[in-house]
Length: 47
Image (cartoon, rainbow, N blue to C red; front, side):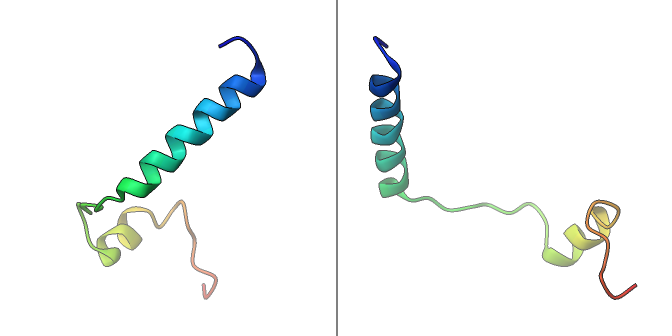
């Protein structure tokens, strides 16, 4: 890349193409499983 502006333009173009393609997320676990597994990272506000 010759300069920052060219890099920024390339990244923007890639992002536009990537977002236009869309995609599906294949979740490997349920929300409940995630709450159990990640409890220590995301403490409940109710406790």
